[in-house]
Length: 63
Image (cartoon, rainbow, N blue to C red; front, top):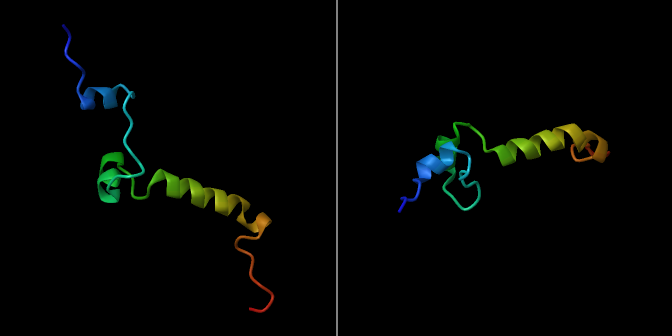
């Protein structure tokens, strides 16, 4: 009977992914090797790309 692969082996093969939601942020950043979570980077890139067009960063006339 074969033994089950370890979590480390499954991660190396790309079968098991690191959790993003519901885990400790510091631990996630340490494991991913990034300074900022990918979800935050993606949201920021989207806002910067579409924000001016859709008015997210638009200044009000009163200011």
